[in-house]
Length: 360
Ligand code: SF4
Ligand code: SF4
Image (cartoon, rainbow, N blue to C red):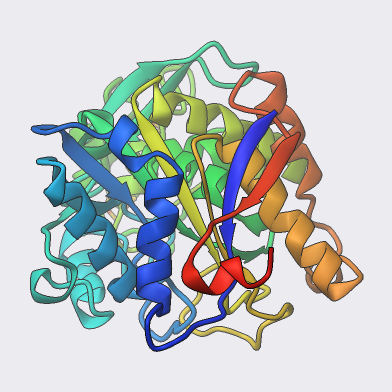
């Protein structure tokens, strides 16, 4: 049975939430996991511009400072998005991160966009999945020595909730890796949107694209890698058919396994401002659960299950299912457990601070 460490959000002048988060990280084993000299990728989501539910940079500062005390070299990272928004290339992504408060003066460390300028700096990592054999992971995540995955726990339109598994699995994937998870078939060029810039043809690994008045794909040569979708800046290369929510959930779990790749890792999730939708939206609807606490574990499956259980027990119904009736969160956890990413059985341990001692 895995251990999930927990702190509620009660505070005092001697013990504020940042101090409680520091205690939580140490109780969850920070010193035993991270070592001097390691390049530690702090995987998080910087929030789309206009969204205000994403993780506060102040918490990230605590993690950066504690890692530096151990002699590690932490950096903040996320990979570019597949959809066109404020984080689909490194320039927009960095400016969004800065505008949302993730600047070195606040967080104490640099921001590195994991899959580079156009979302193509990726490494292929072998994984023995049912759907994924070679996952395309952003290079900065793939090359780090260790991972600290900090997650804002919230709802998600397709897979029910966005927790540690989704943050790591979908969030670390390059743009082509994200397409691989989202779609089950090959891209389709939209001739009305195509500006015939030729970018897709230049980088297609199989030479399957010709551009005269607009891009045309030779499907006998196309291997469905998604590079052209990632590179097209005007959305003219449209992804193929969407994977079912169950297949998407399983692919996310398999990508999480590849992104983790057996390296030292710790996972912490914040069950606060539990919006019904992902932080990829440029807005956040009102929370569907009360602020419940911060949790940490070396098992991301146990952590996601514990966050979900806390929400279900506090709300008395499944608020994510209510917000997105066609979404499914159960399969993400079930498949992650099947492929050996962790356990859905856990023991919840409350950290002992001056405040918590009064309660036990
Ligand atoms: S990158 Fe996009 S706009 Fe440019 S040729 Fe390809 S499909 Fe057309
Ligand atoms: S999916 Fe990959 S192989 Fe197919 S046309 Fe696009 S870049 Fe070429």
